[in-house]
Image (cartoon, rainbow, N blue to C red):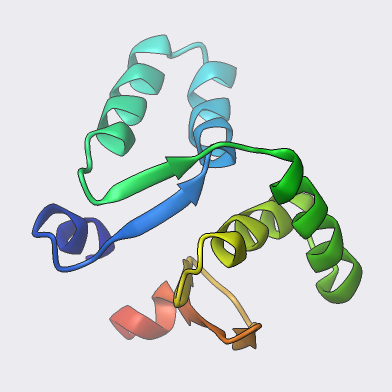
Length: 114
């Protein structure tokens, strides 16, 4: 649903370069370089999706997020990237978070009614 919106230019999205690691770790662990390459092409092929590099600014913001929210480091980096990018809504597979610094959190499970 989200990727469909990106394809049709109804949505603009961004994600941390950390997403590449998160996406490719499992295919590489399984020894499937072909699957990893296919997944990377899929993710990189969306015009409306910007992949934001990990920078010193992101690391500093992630440390602040980690200090206030806790949770996994990866989530702190993703939230920090979104905050620095001025994102209005953060979409995650599952989240109990509702709002951080004016940014709304949307659980895909809630969104699709799962």
